[in-house]
Amino acid sequence: MLEVGKKAPDFSLPDQDNKQVALSDYLGKKVLVYFYPRASTPGCTTQACALRDSKDELNDLNVVILGISPDTPKKLTNFTTKQSLNFTLLGDEDHKVCESFHVWQLKKFMGRENMGVVRTSFLIDEEGNLEHIFNKFKTKDHHEVVLNYLKEK
Image 1 (tube, rainbow, N blue to C red):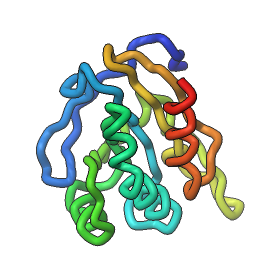
Image 2: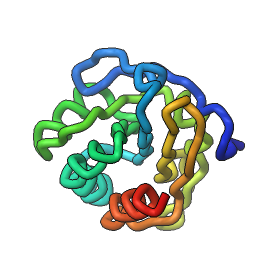
Image 3: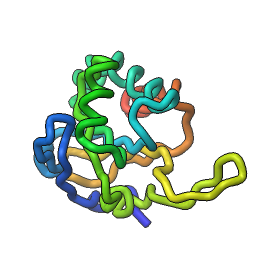
Image 4: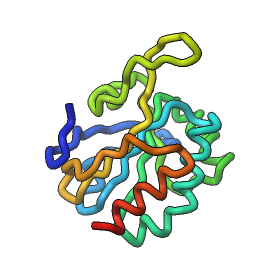
């Protein structure tokens, strides 16, 4: 299990432009790594658009946004373009990074079970350590939960 105060698992994944992006690229900044199930679904779109609209506030707090899902870079490109997203999305097609953050889990939906991403966000500090884990929020309120946490610090 991941613990606050411990080093976050480093990773390198392709972004929406199929360029490799590593967590370690952002040392010196806070990074909000948010895991979501699938691009262009209603809940994921709500969450992404709210983060898009909060990006200036997050920038002012020295926070970079990285969204991770098991989608292909092509799907991420379409999602980014369609929703005018202004932050980096990363594709974890083999869900190895999701597994390293313990968000790839058995989920139940309408009586069926399957493996998938449990919507969770991790705030990683300037040294690459886990500062906070956000796992209790609604997609439409996610950005507010994150901003409230950052402003209360």
